[in-house]
Amino acid sequence: MTPPPARRRNIAPPRESVLVAAMATIAERGLDGLTMAGLGREVGMSSGHLLYYFRTKDELLLQTLEWSEGRLGAERGALLSGQAPAAERLGAYVELYLPEGPRDPHWTLWLEVWNRSQDADADARGRQAAIEGAWHRDLVALLAEGISRGEFRAVDPDRFAARLRALLDGFSVHVAVGIPGTGREQVLSHVREFLRDALFPPPAP
Image (cartoon, rainbow, N blue to C red; front, side, top):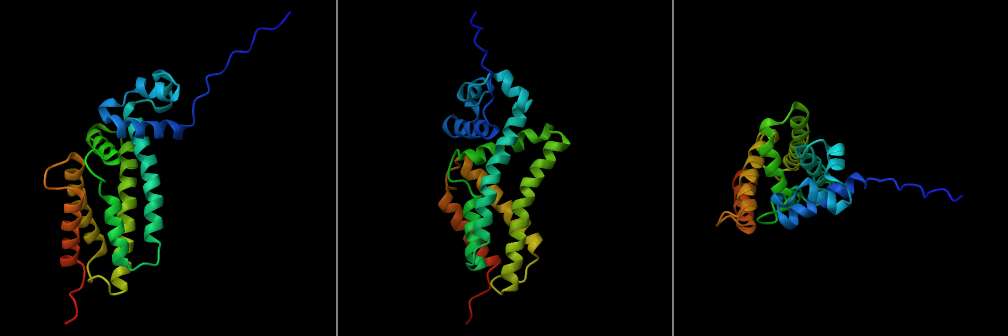
């Protein structure tokens, strides 16, 4: 007697595949288009199966942000570890920080996670702080290097980094939501002017 065929196991796709699909959905249809049921169809899993792995949509969003930030962190590390002048690397940092334009998927996701953080638990808040901290530490180190080389004025690197990131965050929100008059190129011009006035030494007479 021929034995019945073995039942196929429902093998979940790798976690990264789910996060890639989530980010692709945000880029294509925005956050409103990201549902557990729809994402499950994209990766061949039920919404219940997704909830088993991620528990809540908030956790899915945060893990997607962490994955996206990991990729940006690698790119940022490569930019900042180069041999170019500190001023040039600072410009690259700023360009990487700012959204590409309205509905930038990474910034769309960041804004949603920030909004949900009001009700987040301590673990989620700590993970968000870790993302912020990585950007801050890299900027402080770059500023300190530029000061030691005489490329930048003798500012307090930590305080200046906090102010610069606050400026970048504010402008980034404007770019991401598409406020008229604050396109990416206009914002870059504002930031470069601020850095020229506040950080770069005056030209020699």
